[in-house]
Image (tube, rainbow, N blue to C red; front, top):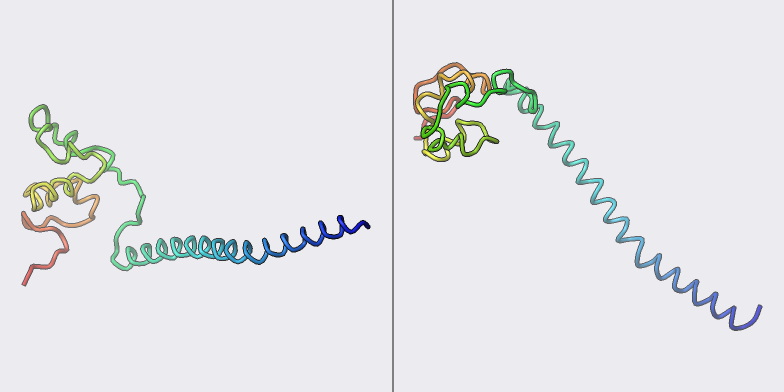
Length: 137
């Protein structure tokens, strides 16, 4: 083996070992962080399922037969009424949440509405109060 080749191989081994020394620990840390994040998401989902079961709430992402219809379709709202309605403007969120955010309170008709009751599985409550809410002291 020639001395130039020997020096080149020594150089390659120093560069390779340096790369291992500097590159492997961050790769391990990144891999461990990704695995922990994945476990945390799974644990949070399990905890949410347990919480919902303890509160006797339906599991998330289970379609509700009444929820297949929007409130303005069920109530047959048209034209100007729909144009001014917060629920119509935000069809991706439940109608009562959109209206509560826009008006500052739950509309009087919501607690007796079939969509609201089916989604929240509650009995009708007095108008203006959200089911399960405790009165402010």
